[in-house]
Length: 79
Length: 79
DNA sequence: CACATTTACCCTGTTTCAAGGGAAAATATG
DNA sequence: CATATTTTCCCTTGAAACAGGGTAAATGTG
Picture 1 (cartoon, chains in turn yellow, purple, cyan, red):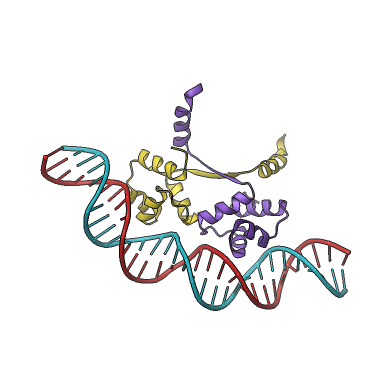
Picture 2 (cartoon, helix red, strand yellow):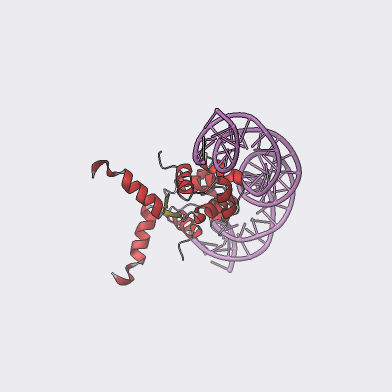
């Protein structure tokens, strides 16, 4: 277990008690997409990945030194 | 500016002083991909997005209540 | 204002993802 | 252990992303 996307998805699906088929239907993607996601394929389409993540309440965010500095500078409305 | 993926990418590219063309070459993707990313297209391939993010040192992470709880339980080696 | 660079957006051919069916292998459950 | 369920993985058929070329529009710079 090294925190890969595949692991995260598998973990959540199992915890949710869903089969690949069911998750696929809830997310509106094909059953093979789920299988491939859980098996390390990363050439999936981002919109499809997002649909799957939403179903399981997984949030996705970006960060970088530059971006954090920027956010800090611009959230100083109250600071 | 509402923190969309497009915004984050544009922001970083500008800060890096790169043109779309240059970023595309560095990331090993087509120039149109960059243009589309910066203009809100989300049906791009995840592997291509990751290449672009890497060039600009943008990290991507996932979180959810379930996952956080799990990590907390399993990182108590020293706690 | 003239000129250079960059971006927006078209088009074309190629590649590959996506969906869904199917069926053996693996796993769970009575 | 028998049987139901789930997962793995093959196949086929669209559909759409991809790269890269081209050019007008926009933007930047002396």
